[in-house]
Structure formats: structure tokens, C-alpha cells
Image (cartoon, rainbow, N blue to C red; front, side, top):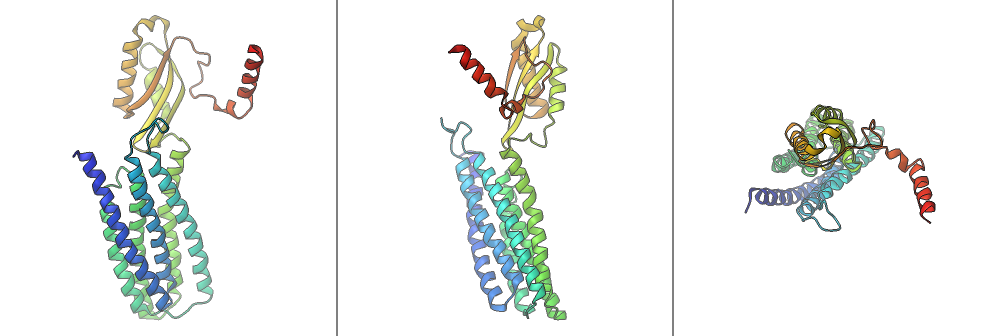
Length: 318
């Protein structure tokens, strides 16, 4: 078994273990929060319930991503993890909004909360959440899908620790308003953790240029090669953060036309070595209708020019 398959199996196992631990946390916090009338504990339990869905989606996407490419899906299922991360981020942001409304309502009508029980239940939740986060820490380095699940569980751990501090505060001072206040803190933690995952996954789904790549630098580097006049129709996107794609047209001098194979090899090696982009398609040409256009003019798709061109071409050939 290869190192890659071992890593895949380990991550799958850890996700399953994380789901089992998190299920216990959810039940304990919901029951405990309802019993002692703590909105803080129930908010944390609701957050954990969303995280259970996050762990499930991460596991499902992780399994899908291992499937080979097919004729229908030539890129395979790598985007499954990105869709999972996007859904997780969106649901967490919505959850933060709901919890904020509930906490503000509780501030206007505070209730008595036993601090010792609140503190004890939240302490158990902190240990469990931190354990799940540590299980996923290694896989979160390079995988946005796993990183989303990891950030959820790590945020839960800190939130639970905040609930412990809230229980101590209520126990020492009797200030029951600390309970909804800690819920608002939970909302901030949820939103802060969810927004980067949501934004990064949305960027990938919108075919945005990866933040680590500067298209201008790539253009300058290619055009600096002897024999290259310009670069145009350049597109850089990511199927998922570890799989970056590049396509472009390169206009070459007519005097270098006989050296196109060597020139292409030089460009490819430079893109791999200097920019780390392994997957690229480069078309060399000696004539270009838009020599000054670095990026393809995609506005033609929306302003009707392409439709007009098609109509004109169709009528000409009729």
C-alpha cells in the first residue's frame, strides 16, 4: 500500500472517529443545556450539530475525491471537497446569525443558570472537541475540505473553554447575563472561522486565480524568454487548491518557428520550476488576432457579440 493510500485511509478513519466523539458531545450538551436552562450550552450544542454535518460532508467528499476520472468527469471528483467546504461555510454563517438573535433575546429576558453544571459539561466538551481537532490537524495542511472540518472543531474547543469560563463567572458573581454574552462570543468565533473557508471555496468554484499565483509575473517570465513576443488568452484556475491549471497562447517570432519544440519545453520547465504549476496547456503560434490581449475577452459571452458572430456565420453558410 502506498504512502498516499495510507494517508487517505488514516484521514477517513480519523473523520469517522471524530464523528463518533462529536455525536456524544451534541447529546450531552443539548440535554445538559436544556436541563439547566443554559442558552450558552445549547448554542454550543447547536454549533456541534452543524459540525457533525460538516464532518459527514468532509468524509463523503474525501471518499468521492479518491474516485478516478471518468469520461463524464474528466477532472474526477476533486471538486466534491470544495463543494463540501462551501456548504459548511455557508451553513455556519447562517447558524451564527440565528444564534446571535437568540442570544440578544436572552439578554432582554435573562434566566437563572447553575454555573457549576454549565462549567462541568462545557469542560467535557472542550476536551472532546480538542481531541477531534488534533485528529484532523495533519490532514488540514493541504486539504481545504479537511481544513474546514478541522477549523470547525478547533473553534468548538475554544468556544467550550469560553463556556467553562462563563460558568466560573456565574458561579462567582451570579451574573446570569454572562450566559447570553458568551453566546455572542460563540457567534463571533463561528463567523470568524467560517468566513475564510466560505470565501476560499467560493473563489475556487468561481474559477478565480489562486491567491498564491500572480498572472502578471507569469506573463513577464514567459515574455522574457528569447523568441517570445507576447502571451494572451491566459487562464489560471484551481480544480481544488492542490490542483492548479494554466492555459495560454504564446506568440513567437517567425524566425524561431523552427525551434518551437525547444521553446515550448523551455516555457513548460519554467512554469513548473518557478511557479509550481504542473498541469498546463500552452499553444504556440506565429500569428495572433489580438496581440495585446493578455486575458481572453470573456465579455463577448454576455454582450451579444458572440451571438451576433454566430448568427452572421450561420447566415453566410446557409
